[in-house]
Image (cartoon, rainbow, N blue to C red; front, side, top):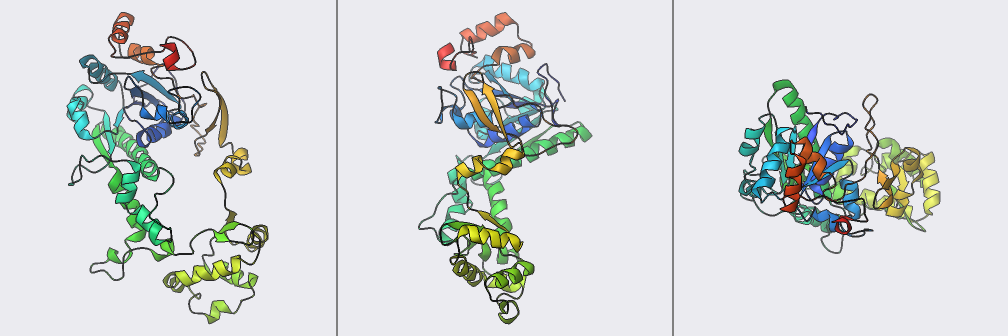
Length: 417
């Protein structure tokens, strides 16, 4: 694995990644890899990653999600449509362990940056494509975004079946983030394989298949068996009352799950005889087959007390329960503050920022201090020098638009070029 002058710390220290990804899925994956110590070289087009331009922001080109998903990375601008830009990319690939992209494979072939072409420059490279649909099926090459993949994987349909007034997308980019995590798994597994075999390889991480794998892990149900033994879908997940329970003054999240929990809950509501007397509640299997009525029973009783009363009683009975948090509540959560989840850092152009630490801890190889997300092309000169370009060549590349670099530490890229 390739070292670099820009020393990093963490379990992936010494790994260099050429990152061609944009928006959320790919940058989220490479952010995790960067947090774990990899030297991630973010290759951006002349206009930058689209995510730079998603508000809110203090200065142009430094949107809030970009600041989170591109920390610990270095930015180099390359116009890959120009021959000199492609050649520079191949030079970077020669000194890299991994190349990650999330455009369609056809686009990489048009740029003459297919696996065959990149591996010719570096046979040990791990070439990872994360995109919409696997190349082996009829949907290969279709455009894909988080909302579309949620629809293909049935998530909006499930929200409707579960009681929403209409099909709704999950209100976070779950397709992008689940596929991003799968990409991290693929990269680290491929690095381990190469450490044993010495061989690089091409890796495909398709969004649709990844989300389908997640959804069907719960909901294939009766169609697990051939012929099917029961209808598809896991009824507990879609039960009408599988929601935060309404109390007298708000909502509480409760999961009365195993036999011990149910005995305790019946005691709390003065119905101790029900566990033995009502067959719907007497075993895990019985409850799973009557889940709608089971959840309705809990909902009826939760409405009789306040949230504070229930949280106290449920806590004392060791029944799993939590408040229903808002996003502000999460940001202000005392546990996250105590566990060091948040880090306050100074960005050279954006000022004081609240960032999230990587949630995983390492006893022997802890990651280093978080570095703020780069300005567009902030490290172009530095990275191109590392690839073997002389200063005069770099300045000529800047003049011709093959690359760009800010001239100072001003308010934004636009203000300093």
